[in-house]
Length: 177
Image (cartoon, rainbow, N blue to C red; front, side, top):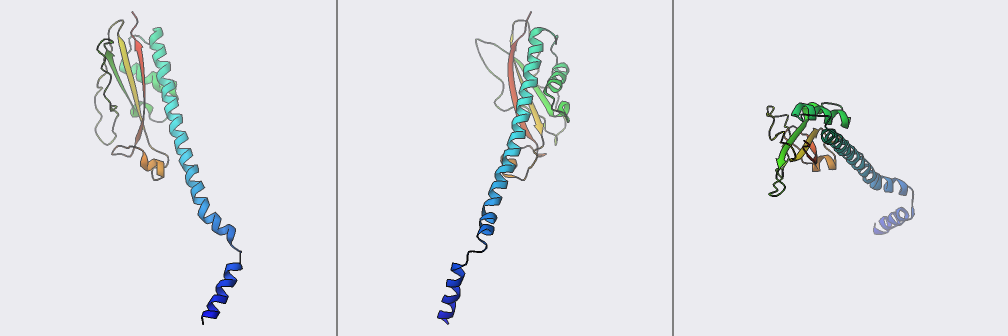
């Protein structure tokens, strides 16, 4: 009996048919996982870069005096227009603007104030237009739905109660006279 089993096992050991299939079954899911991870990460990076661009162009318009007085709806519309984010940019974008004393610096809160769709809409918070020659900090927080929320990166992202993640951008400018 043991001779019969050992003969069968030795014949099976010499047979190399199916090697490529085994390697494919083991390696292919890893490559697909990296592919999905890189697609999600590239979309997040693109959103962040576009938000940075929109915020920088908006701050540039404010510095040059084209957006005077800098009020909340004007700045929000400009950021959405310049960033080309599409979708519900005006609903998912939240702005914080605060004057800062350069001698006694205290920046914005460590955690950005982003909108949460599951909760009722909050009124505009910490948006102070500022006086002439005053340093202003402006932070934009954009909520978005991850492309693949059940993927590895989608699960690792910090999300709110409605399943949305956020990208945050910050800029500073001086109110010109």
